[in-house]
Image (cartoon, rainbow, N blue to C red; front, side, top):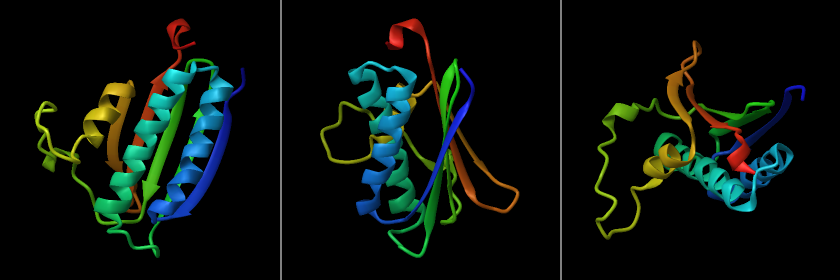
Length: 140
């Protein structure tokens, strides 16, 4: 299978997450993921973008998120790039998932679902998150 790319840009508003979920669903379907696995990948990408909107872009609709999805024979790769406030993943203190309180589990969910999660900054100073889901026979 040749590598396929899909790219969208949204403004940093929670209402636009549906576009990212729809794009991720198309990529997951093209990859042949089972419904449960596809749902987990959609949730992880949604959580990552929600965090970007809330924490980096501060719900400022003048900010944007670019999402590029690449599908090849071995993996789905989603690269999220935003022009919000610089983000330092090391500043996030993981909390015990057994604590009963709302919020704060997005990073945990993302790391559990995706095989590779990389946070970096582009040479232009933009935030970048790379999410990779490896495709194996048991994904289907």
